[in-house]
Length: 295
Image (cartoon, rainbow, N blue to C red):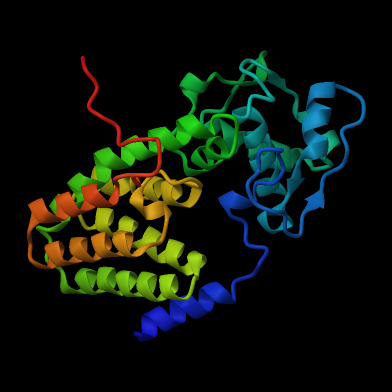
């Protein structure tokens, strides 16, 4: 095992069990992973019963800080539909019910506004914006949608987006024969192999995510490079067998290896084909690879 593989696997095993990840969004009934070190927020007694209901069942990670925690919780409430479009958000009420300062509320709403979830206008106040205004490529919104009521649509859309991005990125990356990148990609495949042999899904996932992000980053297309974070988010929140990356097995590992071989040979066609095979769903899964749509 290479030094890099050993280091990465050791770090993954010793990672803090309280690490926040998409699978830990247990604040809602539809969560798919157990809670870890959750601290409940104050109950929202009185006032709007809908907000109170959501607030009571929400719990935040103190590791995010009050600002990040409030962004996370309000974002989830908006994306899940608990706070519908055009719903007014009163900063004073939010501050009182979450027991945070005006500064925390103000900064949190600014973050949500930058994501397109809310808008603030003079004499109108802050209101929730419709889905059509959201920045659906924002990693946080991807996460919130993937573990909310829209999760099936989100995972399908992410799968279709990856089918658009990654085969092209693999073809383009074959024209950039950087030895350091080739070695790094090979290292990730090696790490994935050792992790799979030891049943270490966390290390496998991390190496897989780095493999795909790095591949996009070296494609030589700045617009594609900008989308590498979206692919990482897609891998982290897939949560169901949508593509060949979602289940660590020999077939998936082999496709990653073939991508590396094709890149080393400068064969863009083979690299693209291997990526398409990797992104193909498992035969036992009902959902199929998206077919071209008729116009």
